Length: 140
Image (cartoon, rainbow, N blue to C red; front, top):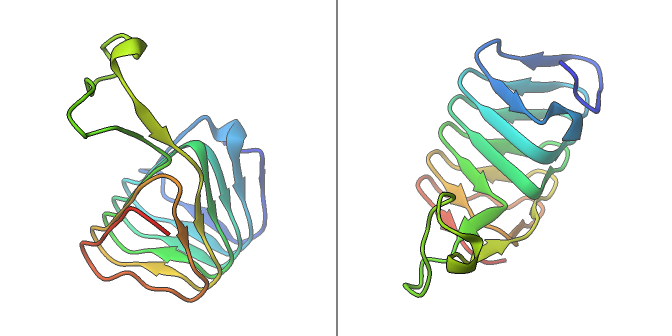
């Protein structure tokens, strides 16, 4: 798979996609279900489950600590366009016309993200915290 490192008892669906796997660290007892996308600098601890259809865009880093998890259809963005109306929002426009908000995302131990939730850059989900389904998490 070309991942940076991984432990034992790791299950990754053949329908999942790993982009830049050399930046991916996976602990032990990890399951990544069908149709997930993992891209960028991502560190997964141990005893983690990433449910179907999740996307982790980790250009600026995503860390999931032990026993954390993602319910189906969650998306984590370590970079996001600035939607305040002063900038364009496209990877096809010139960088001087865009403003990217970026920063690491941390899911501390025992945290769980509810189905269809979105986590934006610079967020720390505290130890044991759970987000409800369809949450948008923009701040610590």
